[in-house]
Image (cartoon, rainbow, N blue to C red; front, side, top):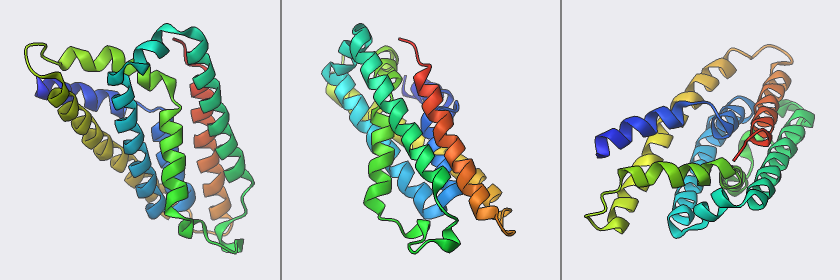
Length: 201
């Protein structure tokens, strides 16, 4: 059952969505350090989302159209806000504080918030995770194993996307390329926001 879960989780986390847009946006717009920190934030968000789902909030979210819409629009607005900020940011060479030296806490907090404010994730865990829990065995231990396995799979896939984005970023070293990288990263955030806004229950 665990092997089946790993295979299913790999497919799920490989499909481009808000978190992948966000990580690749950080990779191209800010560099490898920011990409790594954003992956940490995403995985922390996954663990919290799975925890609250198993605690029952995911079921409430799936059943309540009003709550789903509230979380969806808050999440979409936050992603768009981040995209606009990055779009308007000057090139790193003209900044007093380079983007790559931004506080780690800010990057992790943003990635965590984006992931937690993605309402489809909570609803998804309600439908996905229970299929791999054996009712004849202790549920808490199984939840812990599945949660950590999903987080490990997310780290692997997001790292692959980030490395691909960083390879693209390395090609953009001519004059004006840093601004182009910022615009690309902003586009990823805006795309994630638009994607979140189109989510249906």
